[in-house]
Image (tube, rainbow, N blue to C red; front, top):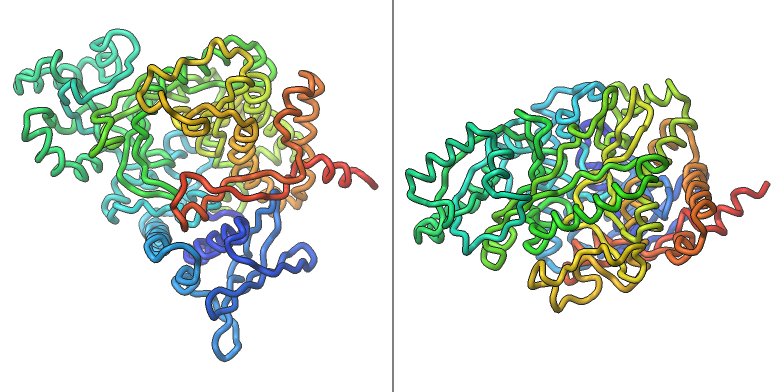
Length: 577
C-alpha cells in the first residue's frame, strides 16, 4: 500500500522522489528554493543538466517531492521526468558507490513491482500481529533503497521476504565449541529443550549421536536457510571438511520474516521467542549481518534496561513501557572470515506480553495508507476524535523513551521498526521497545545509577581499547540527544505528522507544538536540569546523513545540521497572536 504522496504502481517515481528528498535534506546538492503557498520549489544543476521539483516542506527541514514533479531540462529546453541513472551518475562519490546505489534502487523498484504482480491488495486493519509485520510492505519512508535486498533473487524474495508470509524452518549446525561464544540463560540443555520443544530436541540429539558429535565438543547454532545456501560452499570446504562443523539440515518450528527480513517470528508457537539471524544481504544502508561483539552482549544490555524499567514504577503507571529482552545469544567465528555471519539472538515475544483485550501492532503501521485510501488508524481517529487520539498516542510514544533518556540517562534507537504499540480497541495503552544489542547509548556521567551499568570490558575484546562513541558509551550528551531525536522525531514521528497534515489537514507545527508541550510538562514534573543538559530545544540540531554515508562510504556515520521543530524560539513565535 502507498505512503501518503505515492501514486499506486509508480514505484520508480517513489524511489526517485525519496532519492531527491534525501539529497536536498542532507545538502548533497545545492538547490535554489522558493516557497509558493504551502509548496517549496527547488531548482539545481548536476553535470550539464538542470533539475527541478515541487515539494511539501515538513518538520526538521524534511522535504517530500510531489508525485511526478522531479524533472530535468532537455537539450531543447523542455522539461521531462528525470532519469534516475542520469541523476545518479552526476552525484558526488565514487563510481563504485554510485553504481551500488543505482543497482539497489533498481532492485527496490523490481521487488516492489513483483509485489504488485503477485500479492493481491489486502485490508490490513484486522490482521494478526505476525501477519501485519509481513504485510507492511512499504519499507523505509526516507531511504530510497528500502527494498534492495541485494543478494535475493525473485524466488528468494517470494520465499523469504516478509510480504508473502512464507514460512520456513531454520537450518541447524553443530559447531566445534572452540569456534563458539554463547550467552545462554541458565543450564544449556534446559535452554535448548525449552526453545526447541522436546520433539525437535530429540531429533537433533539423534542426529548428533549419528555423527558422533558429543555435546561437550559441539554446540548448536541456527542458520537462516538463505544464509546456509549463501555460506554452504564456504562452510563445507572449511569447517565441515575439517570435521569442525556438521550440518543437521532444517528442523523444528516454522518461522516467518518480519519487516526487517532477518528477524523472524515463530508461526507454530507465537508466544515463543522471535529470533534474529544474520543475512548477507544489503538493505537500505548496510549489510544485515550481526555485529560480532553485540551478540553475547545483548543479554547483558537487556537485563540492565529491563531491570531499570521493572524497578521504576513510573514505567508501569505514568509512562507505560515494556522491554522485549534479548535474553540469549550464540555466535560462531567472531573473527574473520565469517565474522557476524553465523549466529543468533533470541528475543521475547511481543504477543506473550499482552493482557486480556490488548492488541499489538508495529508502530510503522501508523504511517501508512490502506487500500480504501484512508490511513491505517482512521477508524480509531473517527471513534475517539483526532486530537484526543493524537494526544494519547504522543504520550505513549514519546514519554517512555524520553523518561529512559532524561531520568535514567539511556538513549535508545526508537525508530518505527523498533517500536510496537499496544492498544485496546484502538486506544493507545503502552509502548513496547525491542532491538537493543546495537542501538543503545549512554554517558557514564549522565546515568542515574551508574553503579548498575554493565562492566563491558570483560564482555568482548573489542571493548578494551575502544574510544567513546565506538560502541555503547559516549562522553558527549549531544550523541544521546541525537540518537533519540533522530530516530523518534526526525525519521519516525515526522512521518506521522506528515500523514496527519495530508489526510486531516492538521498543520505539522501544531503536532510538534504538542510534542514540545509534553516535554515541557515532563521537565516541570521532574525538574528541568537534566533535560536542559540535552539541549533538545536548540534552534538547530545535528542529524544522521544516511544518503551521504551511502555515497561516500568512508566513515561509519555522517551528520548534517537541520532546523529543530522543537526549538523554543519557534514555538514561542507560533503561540503569539
